[in-house]
Amino acid sequence: MVDVLMRDWSDGHVLLTEVESKDLLRKQGLNAVPTKLAATRADAMLLAEDMGLPAVVKIVSPDISHKSDVGGVMVGLKTVAEVGAAYDTIMAAVRQHQPQAQIVGVAVQPLATAGVEVIIGMVRDAQFGPVVMFGLGGILVELLEDVSFGIVPLTRQDAREMIREIKGHPLLGGYRGRPPVDTDYLEQMLLRVSRLAEEHPEIQELDLNPVFAYRQGAVIVDARILVQGALNSA
Ligand code: ADP
Ligand code: MG
Image (cartoon, rainbow, N blue to C red; front, side, top):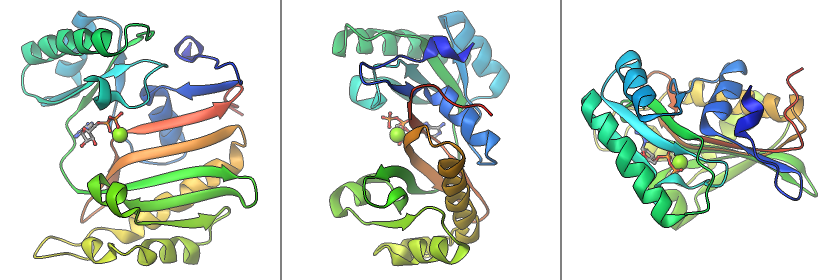
């Protein structure tokens, strides 16, 4: 049962794992990199072989929300042996950085084709209620805080404007010979996140970072969802 992966914080908030978050997003019709939980080193190797190489392995812990900060992410693992070694490296790094963290296992997933990195988020604002956020990923969003917001429920027009509003918008339209990305698809993703926020009032925060946007379609590479109480599956 998924419940064992969740941890009740003293204030009643629960951080879903990346595996759980992506499962929930898929149910909403959002495209996320296939991601499975491995409890052991051997499981991780089997899963990687099954899901396809090159693989990515990440720590799964309800106490860790920024996995790379604690050495908890290894990408581009080309063989099953590399996956086994990555498991050991990640466990050692995480135990060193955060000895108290409860470790559930690792998430195994195929390496996604690189695309233009964007982020999609949702927060609940005291004044406006649920708000969807869109921005460019990577250092741009951190340095420039180049993001746009839209109030739930988003209309198609809102979603379109959110994408056009960001300063880095030219980067999505094919910059310096790079292919333009599928902004229609990104619009649909924003609308689905808006719907998810409406249908699940218990979701307090959602952070899809990064999403890789392509000439056709886009895929969620990392996801973090914070819920109040338990997730309502109805
Ligand atoms: P964090 O918790 O640190 O945000 P992420 O899951 O976002 O961890 O991984 C860190 C970075 O590793 C991502 O920003 C992305 O560039 C890369 N990455 C993670 N998963 C994949 C994947 N499946 N395919 C390709 N790159 C990935
Ligand atoms: Mg991330």
